[in-house]
Image 1 (cartoon, rainbow, N blue to C red):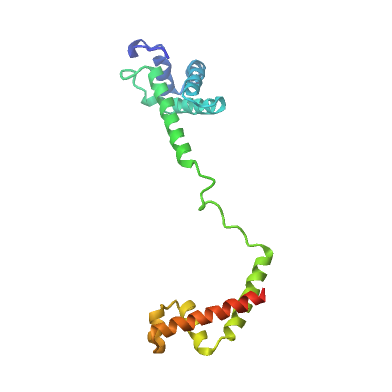
Image 2: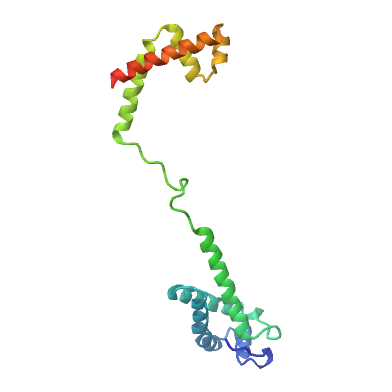
Length: 187
């Protein structure tokens, strides 16, 4: 990157020809000089050769499209082109940084499909639980339903059935013990 005073920049005339007439020969000369240098600059910024080549091409397309915005009183052609290259590299870095996804993120991994026999096992377990519940005395069965299907607290169950809290707890404990024994024997 040679530093050139804006007024003595030999490439400024080429830029003006590109801006005013869309001069392809002027662009070809500018491209031949700057494209390899921009690629090298981008490689020094850490891009692998293929990415540097692609980005250098994008930079030169931008030079063609934005030639009219070049102002030789503000900067030399090289400064202007390298600033475009630097900004494109920053844009690329930002896109890559935000696009990086963590493969271990649980939100990105779908839930594992249940095993084919899992549905059958769940259905069998449901039948066993229903049968075990049916074998409970009616007052215990109603309390278990209130606790698990209606999500009531022990105090709410006691209030609903007009029982002492200790009675509710002991009936639930007895019901759970009967359920546990019945389900263990069904295995």
